[in-house]
Amino acid sequence: MPMRNLIWAGLALVILPVVAIGLWLAALPALPAAFPPTPVPQAETDAMLAALKPPKRARPLIAVVSLNNATETTDYLMPTGILRRADIADVVTLSTEPGPVKLYPALTVEADATLAAFDARHPEGPDFVIVPAMSRDDDPAIMAWLHKQAEHGAVIIAVCAGAKVAAAAGLLDGRRATTHWYYLKALLGSRSTIRYAADRRMVVDRGVATTTGITASMPMMLTLVEAIAGRDKAEALARDLGLDRWDARHDSGAFRLTRPFAATVLGNRLAVWRHDRFGIAVEPGLDEVSLALVADAWSRTYRSRVELFATSMGAVTTRSGVRLLPDRVTAAWPSERLPHGWTSKRPAEALDAALRNIGARYGQATANIVAMQLEYPQPGEGS
Image (cartoon, rainbow, N blue to C red; front, side):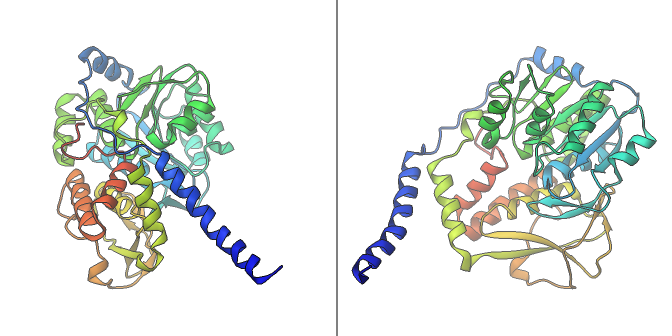
């Protein structure tokens, strides 16, 4: 082939993908308008609370299940931390196999027990099962275990894309449900009888609850606490978390794949020479709810990721008894790559601070894509 033809062929290989990406971006919608979400009728809220009453025990047993090789960080840590600090239930973290549980996009933990060990100790099963998003929706061990617990009368609470796991187990057939905005199409396509509940941050239908994206596990857990222990207990816990309300209202239309979102993600991914590794010192008593939100946020910029560091590789126990495993052994981390301004704040405030700091470092567009991934209604955007 003549050199001229080789040059033109090479240029075509470069130009055509760029053109294709440009056309794809142009086809995406601009930022959607945000509207104040409509309040949820009190009758609907009352029905949700009634549906979340403990089915078996006065002090319920709650299992948070995980897949060892990849379970979503906040989906796992936030329900565990919130429910344990409420002290209205016995909360156990479970994994499919012995050994560490790798969370994504950041952190590693040790579960309290395996599914098999839990079953041996509690053959009657838990009252509630929390199902986070996982790397695989149809893991055989998870599928079999969820089926068994549903048959034993447990209420299944699938947070975020954990709804896809519940759907794969057939638990959403014929039910109203929701999930993280990015996975909604896949969820509805997986099971034709699922009925989407728009503009609801959480939904409960005949023993199965689902939520929208990652941060929705906070209002979901507060609603569960209210159902178990009453409004006063939930209000006190909400103050501790930094929330003033936690109902199911939501503006679903504000969360979707847009041109600014996609363009920012592409630009950040391509800027490989400007990627950062942030460190968080893991110490006993650390607030695992705030940690989850901050580590999750800083690991979703497409410019940075978070690692835990400590002076040894042993497990470190958090405020609510979660065992964290450090990623690195070191006594120090460069100060410019330490997330600042969150350790003394309440969890919701810690997330707001993280988003402000992300915006200051990488630009507001990057802070916006983080909030969009977390499906977090920022101040001034309604819910």
